[in-house]
Image (cartoon, rainbow, N blue to C red; front, side, top):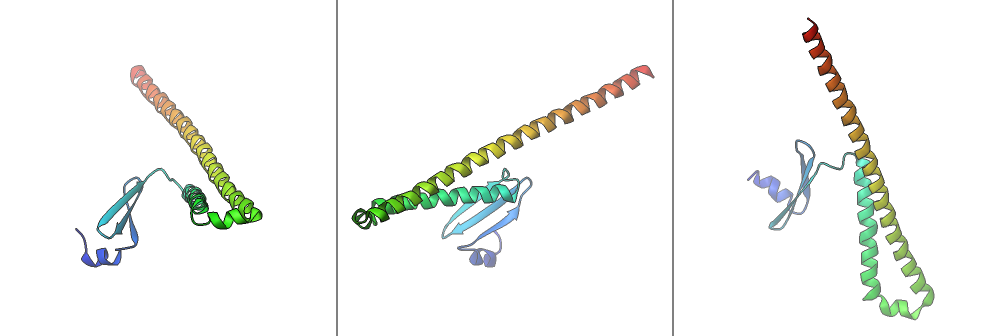
Length: 139
């Protein structure tokens, strides 16, 4: 199970430990344990971009819920406040979409580069094997 002191100290905090091909994050919240495994976020730029996208989307969703429930009487009474509030919500939604599209573009570019590198590596290996078989056949 592990050290009892470690479990008690990380009751509401998360801790991380390296795993073979990625990073494992374990969160203990009360009795539940949530484990996230990320091997696809290759760099800190990917993590920052995805966290910002999540932040923009969460804030825009929160603004949508609050604007339709709690703040509705205040927004209906003032036209300028109404327009400003929903404009900010719209801008945050557009920012989340832009971050998602940027992430898709970078992911596709990285996948294409890795495919090309794999093809070059495979072709180099095949050429090396061909040269070895020719040497063995000639000698």
